[in-house]
Length: 186
Length: 186
Image (cartoon, rainbow over the protein chains, first blue to last red):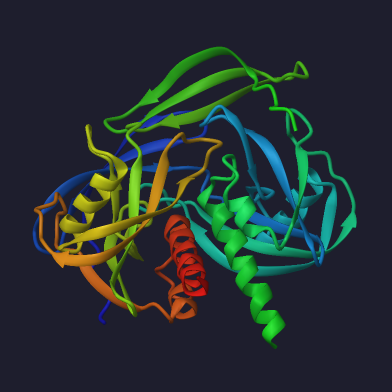
């Protein structure tokens, strides 16, 4: 089907700004003439990465980390923002070394995902990390992250964990599982 | 393992506010004594729902909708905020009727997910919708959504679509597929 014509932006205005985030209001005219005011959030614009690290054929590594939005500890995969000048793969390898103390000789890109594209432009590249080797980099974490090894064949149990909730970690887990199943079929 | 002690909130301050969102700065002291200032975003606090609607055993329905954060059209599953007084299931059925013109006699809850729990408290309940019946409710959409039927056995093709990026839609798709596979094994 033909590409749909995006709404025309009639006006944009910065309505709120903090150290990390800017909230913008945009006045839109849709192709049918309807006009609406929407809000959207601009972050760093740097993009982010998330890695499913595989310690061996049977074990992946997760981290349990404080999440300020929920004010509790959440279980998920190592992740972080891409620094200026980094490719997504280089950022992925840095985050692994900072958060779990391993580098990955092999990174397999699974998919780029967005968070809530109605409000945010932020995009995150999901990877599998294989052939891990011990190497630690100092990160900016306020406390060491708890590293949680998890059997790859216990996906149901992981999905049932009450602190494993982040949609991007859930997507990465299931994409990793699909990738492994496809590998085995070859 | 014992529940980790959450950081102590030393101070909270509203740093920016718009019509829809509030950005709060929080000063935290971690259990090891480290102090940090974080930012987090508060939305409506109402929670949200997303539904994978199954028109029949072979076809799911997606929508293509304008996403202001990316300023383009995105393919995904029907979704929306829970209105005051609604349960997640009631909201799911209302969103289906508004966005695709069907209600669902059967809703199967897949999982509750979060978006980016380091910054947001927002949570979304993912459902499968089955036994659809035609019924349309007027929504607040500025234009009719494009409805996109998709064969359930073409998951790889959907994952490869450049406009199918939202992590919560990806998670719902793969959780739906797992649910179907488990049903077939019974």
